[in-house]
Image (cartoon, one colour):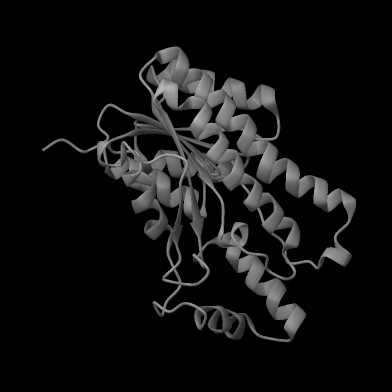
Length: 258
């Protein structure tokens, strides 16, 4: 039985680590060819080398429209098509709104919102040109569904992603392009390790104490892993999900709110 994404091509931005890396590995396991688009060139190249000829690393700053366009063009030129676009690149820092500078605010907006907008647009154009539809999946967060103290700038970006995804789903439905987003809860990633350190420093906790404090908010009883997110991201690209678009799906171990 053929792998469910055999012959398909995916791009994963921010694919060199964390949730993005989990998505890359899952797509490969499901038979797809994958481009890892990331500013972390060394990590992206190492991951691509470890996964074989069906994976290619492309250095890309998602805030630069020319780089994003070139990355998509290179993907189509190398693999012949683009079917799935996972816009995962983003970052978070622990900082109160009062302590957030205008520069930090603009940088957060640029990476987390503009980066996804540019990647969505470039991916959709390639899919429209192919005329066979496609799937775009954007990374939001539980913080996009409810405000969380000390990450207000991050919450603002992730809420915007949900609205932008819903709007794009309506605009591109006639091209048979489905647009959804995912809202992870507490997932064990390098980005979250940085956040744990910041929380620990701010609240005079060790890293392990901060980890346990957040784990205790998850009814399922454990932190999530990148593969928990990647499994759903991959499924959203199957024919079984053909009627799902404009939706936001949480992977959070029943942590409220949904």
